[in-house]
Image 1 (cartoon, rainbow, N blue to C red):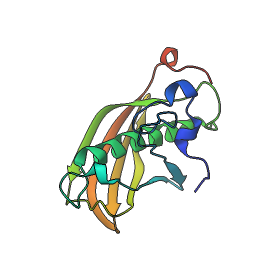
Image 2: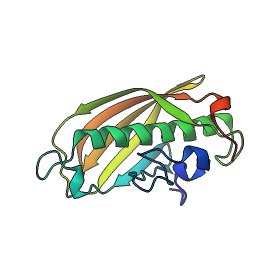
Image 3: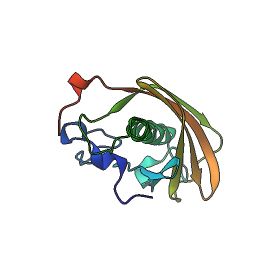
Length: 157
């Protein structure tokens, strides 16, 4: 696993996302790390992420899949191009499709682990599959179709 999160490579102008923006003081600050062929994110829910007492709100799980998926897509695109993640122009992705299967209630008192793998890379599209676990038990599965942002929307560092 690397010491630097994938999102740490995002240019400042693209670091305000509610889910993963390091510059959004009110955001979730999701951080994704490469671990071999997978990426991993750990997130500790807060009491205000409650759906019903003791359990996580499903929208939080969708947000984790969303931002972890697009981060994973960016890392995969750099890897496929044989480029380091700090090279220009930056490769940034947005979500074209998000699918979540909620398998069981997710406890709020556990650190959540999201693991993602790249299912397919085709041109500017990357499909990422994900699982979310709490206490070693898979609580949700998801898939993100991420598309690369056009260069004219991605500011230089």
